[in-house]
Length: 116
Image 1: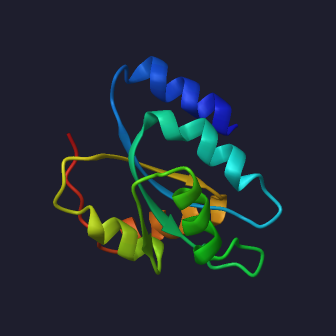
Image 2: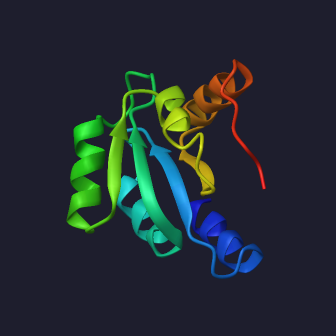
Image 3: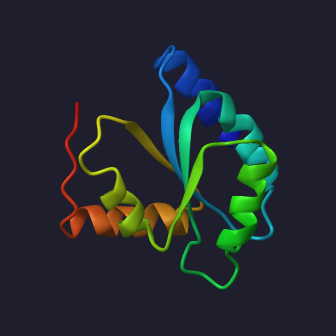
């Protein structure tokens, strides 16, 4: 599904670079997901989803470092969203549905983001 997302981002938003809020589970191919999405990104915000199966943030940051990605860590999806609040960046939350749910709850719970 990440490969399809990478293709869709490339086809639907030609030339646009994305900020990805990313977190996934230990049993997923995090390295493969990062590799597939990296060409479409300007930066990454790594988040450990609130689930015991989540890949720890230090491992996510290590994967980013190995690929020389511009990456920062956020403690929560809410913190990640707050960090981009006043930017004009194109943002995509990707990795686990848990993380997407956390981001959605934060957004609906009062995180105000400007949209193009």
